[in-house]
Image (cartoon, rainbow, N blue to C red; front, side):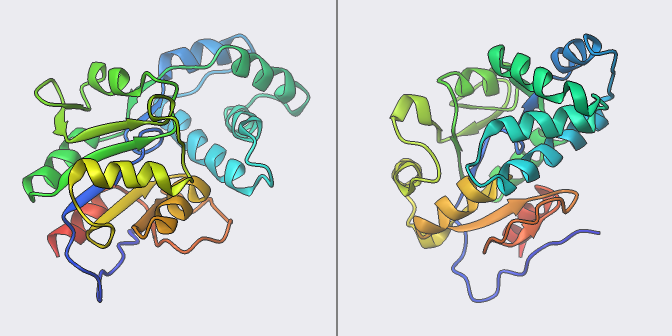
Length: 234
C-alpha cells in the first residue's frame, strides 16, 4: 500500500533534491550476481533490489553507521550462509561494486517531476564518479544527454563535504536557486538524507519501499518515488 504523505501547511515545492544510491541507482546487478556466484548463490534483479533496502535498514540501525552492516545484510538477503557473511562483506569492501543499475521506472518519474517545472539536483555521498555513472546509465545529467536534465550533481568527494553535514545541502540549494523551505529531499538513508536535509531546513522524504527501517526519524516514509510526484501534483 502506498504511503503518500500529505503536504498540508507547507510552501509549494520548487526544487527536488535526490540521493543517487537507492533512489536513482543500485549496485550493478550483473556484477552482484557474479560475486554471489562465487558463494554458490544467485539472485534476480527484484531480489537484489529487495536486498539493497534491507541493507539500508541495517546501516541505519548500526550505531556507528558502518557500511559493513549494509554489505552483510545484502549478502544475507541473497542467501549467503551466516558463517560466510564476514568474508563476503570484506571481499566486497575491498572491491566495491559500481552503482550503475537504474531503479525501476526512475527515468519516467524524473521526467514527471521535470514536467511539473521543479528544479532537480542530485546530492550524493560518492567517490567522484556519480555524475558519470548517472549519465552512462541514461538516468540524468547536467545539460542535454540520454537521461533527464538536472541542474547539478553534487558529489561529496568533489565538493569536500558529505551528508549528513547540512553544508552539502546548502550547495545544492545554491545550485537550484531555491530557498530551503521550497525544496524537498528524497533519500533512502534516514541518518544521512533525512536528518541531514532537515538540519539544513529542508523537508525530507525517506524512501523505504518495504517498510524495513526501524530507526526513528522525522521525515515521512514513502514506498516509491512516484509518491513524491503525487505530492508535487497536489
